[in-house]
Image (cartoon, rainbow, N blue to C red; front, side):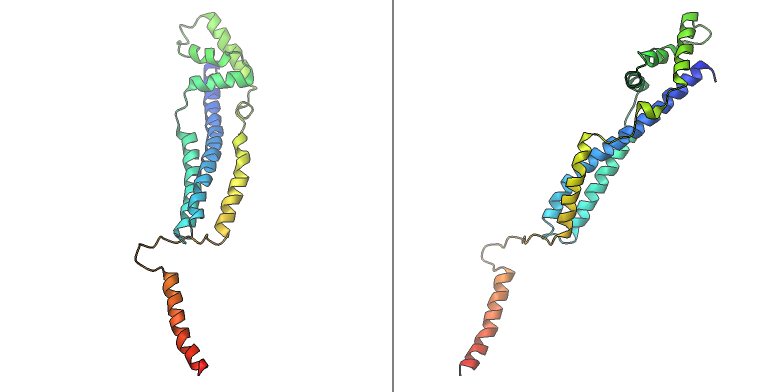
Length: 194
């Protein structure tokens, strides 16, 4: 493999690795947002006994999937990848300049340019993309366990006693039920009194 192919292959593998790292980070961030949004349907599951938990699960899973897709599919120019890799691997702008030099045809390249590409290719043989872009969660991932525990607790606890408001002039189902029980109890009390 010549120097140009090695540099192109390394840039492509660095780009793939950065996409994976970005997908992991975006997935965790979007999951956090989805869990926070899922708390609302869980709080009002007394009004929607079946739909509340299902909506909460859909929000959490959907947001996480959207984050992963965003991390994988968002535009990622090679110039950005080469700048990030240069700074993280301490390559002193070698990848950025090598990427620019790849645009010059090999036949028309001066000796100095060929020497720079050869030196960059020699450095890149020992480079591992995992070292440049490790798969690790960011600081906001510390908030995931408490928010997930709160969502799980709200899902397992009985619903809050929320009811739909009763229009004026109508009696609520509890009042109607209490009146019926009183009406049944009156004749029984009268029979017992005699």
